[in-house]
Length: 170
Image 1 (cartoon, rainbow, N blue to C red):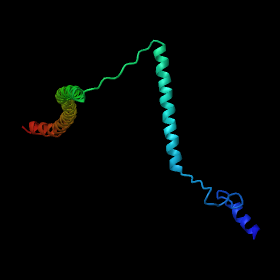
Image 2 (cartoon, helix red, strand yellow):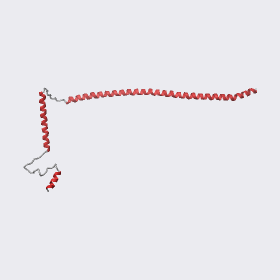
Image 3 (cartoon, rainbow, N blue to C red):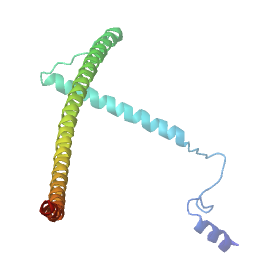
Image 4 (cartoon, rainbow, N blue to C red):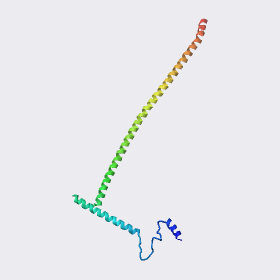
């Protein structure tokens, strides 16, 4: 049976082994982790205070004076913060107004430039169309002129022998 207990306790190394602990009500010790943590935090605070006191005495010895920070009136701080905020808001409004005015100017300039560019492109297209139409009409005129000349020559060639025959009969 001793083996069995030893095997169980060996695998549970974080538990207290019964061979090494005596259980008696006269000799009891309670381990309270919270109490230990509280004691350690108090000790660290005392050490920090002692260190701060030592630093103060060292700085006083070196000729530095320690100044106490006076109480700050939060109403004054709030008023100053509100004043700074108001100035920033007014500056932001001016920036926005300037940006809107500049945007309107840019929009008007772009509209004017677009109008001018559209007019120029329209005029170029109209001139191109006029040149094309003029060339087309010129070609048509030359074709009709040539047809009329050919028709005239043909009619003249047909009527000339008839005229000569009529004149000869007379």
